[in-house]
Image 1: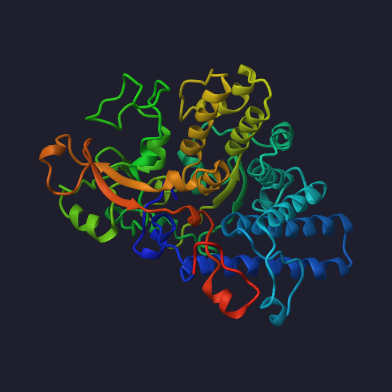
Image 2: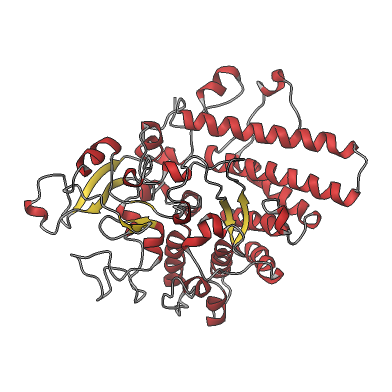
Length: 462
């Protein structure tokens, strides 16, 4: 949320803008599809035990179903707080009268389920089973839950099991691992599977800028862009390499791999032009609440100009980079000694990619290292669905999200620039986000409240 901007539908802006309410269609869709997934898992878990088949294979399949049920419950608890825990197939009457469990109970349920299924899952999966749950996937999400629960030593043990398995490794590439050719990267632990003409992804349509034939439905804010370090490993406000007139030069290469920056980035050999002073750009600014920046991660140059609706690239749910950063954070917060060996095993593997080649971390002071690790999670994992989870577990979601948001740099002479509102550094003003404390937990959908009198709305929502 802190990194994404808006799309053409105002209801997606409500998540960060303080306008979130129980009638939001995205809220309703998330709740509905989540409980549909849980119902499918429960149906499987109730009926498969009676089938005569290989018992080991059956145990593995049941563990997979329990994984998805636990994964879905955790996300519901994370976003909505108090929600129903559903572990059996319900009649319509039963479904419309379920009661909520506390957020703590929901997350504990997910954690216990993942712990219970580990030994029934294979350590690795062959290529033809790509997308099915492995032990590494279950451990990865279990580690994610334990970080949220601040069970630091346990989280470290869980992540270390993945590392010690030897199944996964850091890919020397970066941008390409989010393309279709990168689906078999040793970094991917679990991904939603798409296949051209069978189960198509529309990412190439909704993310691609209109100048490349896409819809450009999402923007990136300058807050994310400015998170990326300079190539000397220092933040922009500390580095001698920073040039305020050319703020995108000498940055961590992951910036340009992640964000298309006007008049700097190229896509498919074509310069990305989005400056409001250029032809037609101002129309796009007004039409799409344009920040100028857009998402480059997932834009597959090998697929351009393929059918935007039929891309077959996967969507990664967890990859090895997150495991390494999770292990380092868990060790740090547990009070374990921070050694150069630990840093080289974790964060420096990411910085040492051939495609990144950033200075290695040598900082061992816990307070300073904490900030380094948190920044690294943003720059490495941007747009991968973990940013809001991180803000919630850090406890600073509201204060981080609210405030003024800016887009691209449009002028080096802000005092005399009149085309668009800009700040003192010449960055285009985008919007003010009035994110309130209660917005960290989403409202229960009104459609559910209308049919189930046992559900209680979250505080702050009517």
